[in-house]
Length: 455
Length: 175
Image (cartoon, rainbow over all chains, first blue to last red):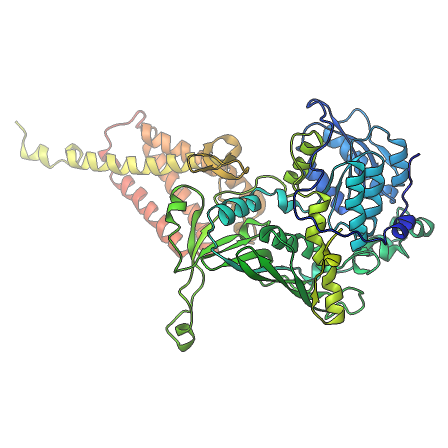
């Protein structure tokens, strides 16, 4: 008999916390039964909002997919998504439209894979439903709004034997893979990395409440879900429906929405989980919101080379300060990397061995100039180090940033690849993030135990 | 045997003839090549990056640009200048559009007629007017160096007209 998972019984059942941290290879990395390469993968979508559009646009160039079904509690979005698929691929059919995910998974018996792009508090229920319906799942990050939800996703994936890729798309980005495997691990251009530094500074204009144009227009309001539908799916009202990221019961806030991508890179590049977090946060501008709009945190790591510290800040009030990037600072060099090539730079410490041989062989490119130095020989300049030389990665990504991660997922479904970010690895990387807000709220350092970080 | 009188006749002066020819050719090259460049554009393609003598396995790519010519790339007035001139009250947009269409072909036609020696005087005169029309735009945009630069072009056209009687190579010398 098929087990039905609703959000309510999911939450009730997810309180047991497993133990046993596994940092090694995950148990399930590629589909057990290899499909014929010519077979189309039948894909369903749960959630047809903005992130769905991002993923769909990244999937458009991936061959061998059959867009079978779409689901969202807002009818207008479902219709729009189905029409977009029909027109984009000139389909001779229209994907079947659903309002309820459980209904879709019950009726669509031949789905191979499901893409989940719903609000964070629905990620775990939808992912587990889909896994238990026999589908492989690509789920957007953050895995869940709660660490227990994330744990349940790992267990469900391993219990069902189905693939579950989490949308930390940088893990499949050639630039990130190259920086880690070639420059840090093989050529060790950074020397000993002692510090990581990351930030996402988002302008206040991009952080305001959304949905007002629809909610306040009587004509447009008709296309929005009714109160009974909103309540059924866990939203108190339309404001929550559009702005679920602002509410503690529905999301992890900016440290989760934005920071999860980058703190994941800290853990991935260091190859370990942090041993503690110390955080500070506040509602310095958006005072009415439940989540902090300004969060800073420091993670402490034990790495094979020695200790390291990582500082991360997320602001939803200003875009200045260099945008968004992750920087790995070592005794011989620094890799400052971002999804945006413009924010990516390599710096060689003046005292480090020459990188000219690497340039000559094409591993890196010489950049324009050096890092800024003091303009004159004033007293302050006398204390400065010589400015590091600037270099660049040898190439870029010529696809939408999510495409390689989705390609990796569908190749894994076909049995041709291994997942780059399966649920277990994603959990190990995300687990420390769940403790940032508690640390900031309690204004104290949290020293991690196995219980904090394990499934 | 050459007489003194014959040697002093300007239109029999080989140096003056060659000098005019050089001036004419410079003006031809200036007009024709500039006209051709109005049809120039670029295409970019992404190619896999070679690292250590082999194509990288990560999927890193680099954009490679190539210069190409074609009608689809035509741009009479460069886009940056066009946008600025569009805001000038003295230049109606319809006139600017027409000028944009005409400029490239006009440079090519005048350059070719001057090269072949077809109505050399009229060709030079029209070329001078064309450079003056460009000067108007430069004045409106306050581009002093451009004004001086075009002024030199007009002086060279005028010098060619003054010395056109030294022209020896032409198809149609009626005008």
